[in-house]
Length: 245
Image 1 (cartoon, helix red, strand yellow):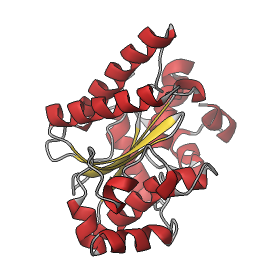
Image 2: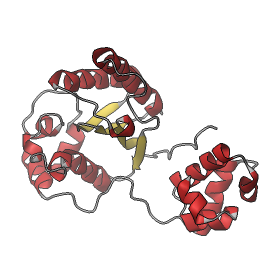
Image 3: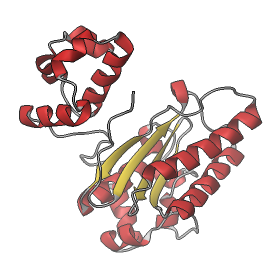
Image 4: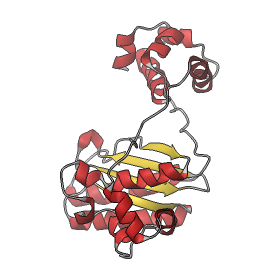
């Protein structure tokens, strides 16, 4: 069953998160972090994507990307496939390295872009590892100290008023930004989203489907921002079945 289409960014900017499958660690030592960044750089050049910020945590990664050519999926496929092959060859691991579907969130305003960059750089501090300025595997030092790396820093630095302004803005904390936050979908919007995802399938017909297909559709409806209660009303299914899916 194909997944629902990702939310398309009108600005071309996305905050992307890729996680280790089942929460497994993606990086075992410094060579792994360096190899991943090399693959990010290669995939970005190949797909015409700009990397504005990044942070590599032990079992997940954050990327702030600019994708003018609508090649986000190509970029992520090249990156995750390349790293998974290296990881499995090095460790003897068999199977998926990343969760099969990366998460992406459109970033549609300058204010949100700044907050997304700050949120990404603040991940080590939020996790209780160390302050952002002490963490090695993020683009923070490319911004704050001018260290050469893979991030395109001019846009965000321009918005902050330079490196000192960036350091001040970063020190202010996370603000209100959260990855995955969504405004409430109205019932009218929910019906339109369901129509787009389900196509010719009537929402009420999902009840009669075999469990795997039913659950895939329910997941896609929830992933698109519909509440459990909205899905209940559209499909006639109970919340227990929806939550299970």
